[in-house]
Amino acid sequence: MIYVFQDQNDGSIHELYFPTSKAPKIGSARTVKGRRLVRLASMPQALVRPDAKFVSHSLPRNWPHAKDHEPGTGKPRFNSIHEVREAVSRSKDTEKDQVAYD
Image 1 (spheres, helix red, strand yellow):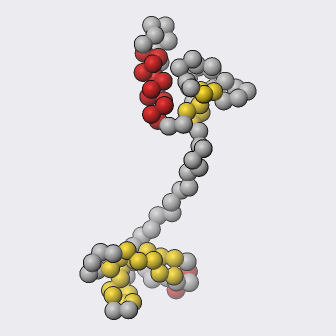
Image 2 (cartoon, one colour; image 1 turned 45 degrees about the vertical axis):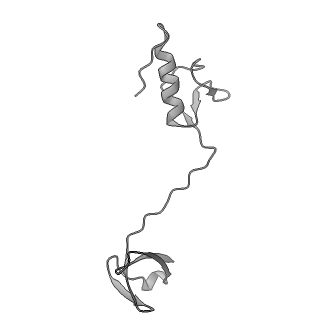
Image 3 (tube, rainbow, N blue to C red; image 1 turned 180 degrees about the vertical axis):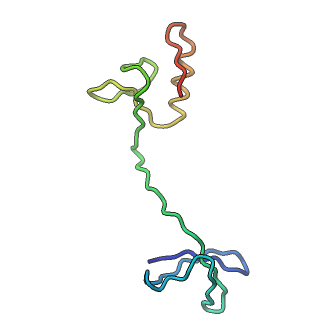
């Protein structure tokens, strides 16, 4: 498995392979090729699909201010929080359709 280390001298980041059973503890130091490296805690990165969509379950079905709707259910579907804020601001311009999004 690959583990992340930081050089104590210049702060550069290095990735080193160790078998899982022999991995150094977080915070422990190793000397590799004359460099003193300290193991850092690494967090797994979640992969977000570029085509991921957010479907709102609290907004009305077929809400006219949403750019897209989920097929079959008519629930508003958004690509980003920016689209949500834009749709909510458009709804505030209409007197009968003011929505407070939580």
